[in-house]
Image 1 (cartoon, helix red, strand yellow):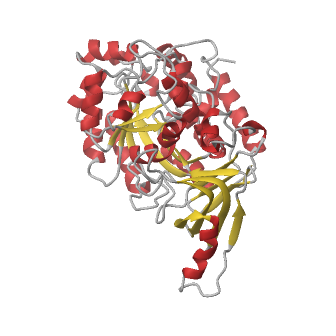
Image 2 (spheres, rainbow, N blue to C red):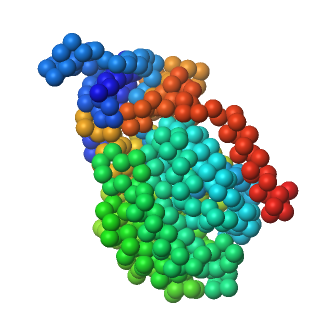
Image 3 (cartoon, rainbow, N blue to C red):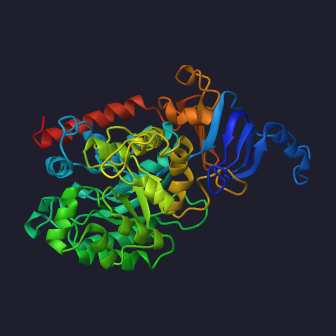
Length: 475
């Protein structure tokens, strides 16, 4: 057994209650970790006495002590939606101002040139960047598999980074020849898709508590898969414990028009007709649901992942997150694809979620009090854990998995913010973590990423990106 003592935090944010009022924030906070589990949460003085109360550890000290003075200590952040492979095409299309459908049509032929090495390297780079932003759990959506690529490629990368990983085996089967959006060359046959989904579950899925790897099934979107594949995916997933279902839904007005023309239904109604609702389902984006649809999703305990930066850069709109939270929906945050955000910073995503809900849009007047800093932080922690159906992460409490991160608030970027250092994490410029512990293992220390050297990874990643775009004729 290894015992780790983190002490002297300026504030320890537990996220252990049902709302901002009941969640404890402990000054001069401390956490004790035994192996990969939290065994104490409280003040530093109480933590120093904690060892004396353990008759099973006579004369035993802490194996490692981390002084978190000047830091806010929070649960590890949870990213509920990403496309890690898109780090290969950052700033391609977004700088010019493309909207979603045009952006996808431009990028599909480029992504068709990806190799297994490119999928692996892009995932490794994106995950390292996420970890440095405070993220400890990542759900990724890989939905095209050109040139022999498999979900195994990004799983290998996640294991080398040491992040808690929820890869979803995505798919596209509805090509242009059948009225879908993607070109046929990036689509796969549905029997082969289901066969590989089964392989991924049986090879990798671990439903046990503190699991580092859980598989989900994720047909890409209503405009890129058939209803038959959506139904078959639910039937397969629900044969296994804690295999979740994921897709994009109600992201843009173009998607809404597509669903009305193709299926005669709005996106949410179409998903409901396919049995795509319930506690094992979560949707990315949900920018354009109406009030009745939010009510129905809340009643079925269906989850939503809010992706504010992506929704802004592609001009998709502003999701009504305030209404969803008020109606007790399961809502988390996602960075989304690195090419429709161009960043992998989950704390930055929480800040943007807070700011965006305060901005006025049709039907909602601008209100500075519409969304608080602590509510945004809750979305990025306990909210994301709920979306992924995890009760072992998202908060700092005895018995939970040891996923915790610390941000310095005694630095240049937070100077003057110590009256409320928790709020300062969200209102001030997002910074990198000072340390990160994932499953009891120190992954970032003194701001330095520990698992491997990053400069050579960046060099390899950039080479693969340029080679891919050269093959696609972009450069």
